[in-house]
Amino acid sequence: MSPDPRLARIPPARWPSREEAVASRLFSALRVGACTARTRTWVPAMVPWRASADGFVTDDVLDWYGRFADGRPGVLVVEATGIRDVPSGPLLRAGDDRFVPGLRRLVDVVRERSGGRTRLFLQVLDFLAVKRRPEKATWVRRFLRLGDVHRERLERSPTGAGIARLPEAELREALLALPHAELLAILDAREVEELEKGYRERVTDVHQPHVRELPRVLPGLFAAAAARAREAGFDGVELHYAHAYTLASFLSRTNDRADGYGGTLAGRARLAVEVAEAVRARVGTDWTVGVRLLGDEAIPGGSTIEDACHHALALARAGLDFVSVSKGGKFDDAQQPKVGEAVYPYTGPSGHECMPTVKIEGGPFGRNLHLARAIRAHLRGAGCTSAVVASGGMNDFEGAERALADGTCDFVAAARQSLADPDWWLKLELGRGAEIRRCLYTNYCEALDQRHEQVTCQLWDRDMAAGDPGRAGIARSNDGRRRLVPPPWRA
Image 1 (cartoon, rainbow, N blue to C red):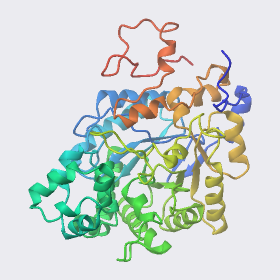
Image 2: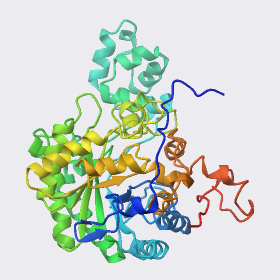
Image 3: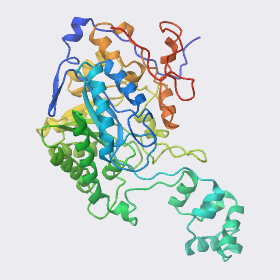
């Protein structure tokens, strides 16, 4: 069968000998904050949906991170971990001291499985409420906040004038009988979104007390979570200021808050800086603190690389030791979810830029390196030495080595390639690159994440028939159809 011409081809790779790898920049040590990474190889945070329903570390979580530790990356970042002590499904949490023992077990497993060669950071985040897309009848009957403005719009509509003055209960039923386009015409933009995509809070919803108070609340919550990570034995923490989450929304050009925490560049960066300062004050200067930051929101009217350079410098001056650069992944342009499902920020154009596949023009390979390069140049030009981590379709030795050599970045991160083959860094280092299982970049894994199912890789099961001792004893996903842990590799 001939290859699909619509798909970008995975570039061929030349794998280094063991001697070449050992002498390379990629496999040289580098200090990042208070610790030194043995190599410049980095596995960024990925949420595998293996935590317990109440946010605790499980044996499946330990197996997941232990398997990445087998590949001995220089740095391994543990998945997005909530800073609040609130129900959030099978997502790790650090919002209370009771989570510390489980996190400590996780640290111990990574230390043991990597032979002490991998530095371990915990990514911490905050997020606002997102509700599932409702049934139309349910939303109109229960959640639409009817007011005079809706009746006034009905009076001006071609078929709605006759129902505009009905009692509320009757009016709601009459609205359901309208053609859908006419119903949408009497709603404002937020109401249309709530009906068509589900309710979603924004940092600009300052009419809500808990949103208005975020600048007062978040620095302490992030600082406390970071302190728990330090108590658990992590080497550092990564503050999640990217994608669709709270701090990224404060940094965004779409943030027009008028209370000093929005509008201008400095205003939008203010809370992010205050959180960074609070974390640094809590954990001290002898522990690594960094940030995951968007180099480009990739949405109309959103932040660009110029904004990112400003934010990165402000955060470096606030004491952060590294900037891990990402792109896109916003709710703003996400596809409409099905009824009963929540909007997912990696389904629209910005999501495709965040996790580009072989179906996107040009493919994913090194696609976002220019963002890391611009941020690093801006930092160095201002005299800041914070490390810069580049990611985005990195899957070969020469591309990684070139990015380090030309000043694009200080560390090279690979998420999906590391998922496809957690041993790939070690195979490179040992001169056994020909044995690497290369990611296909179809986002099979991302589709599972979207459904909050245990994340696996389509390549893992291909080795089941050859080389594995048999199907019995292999940990399987909840549906029994997929392998839960990558196949073992013997160095």
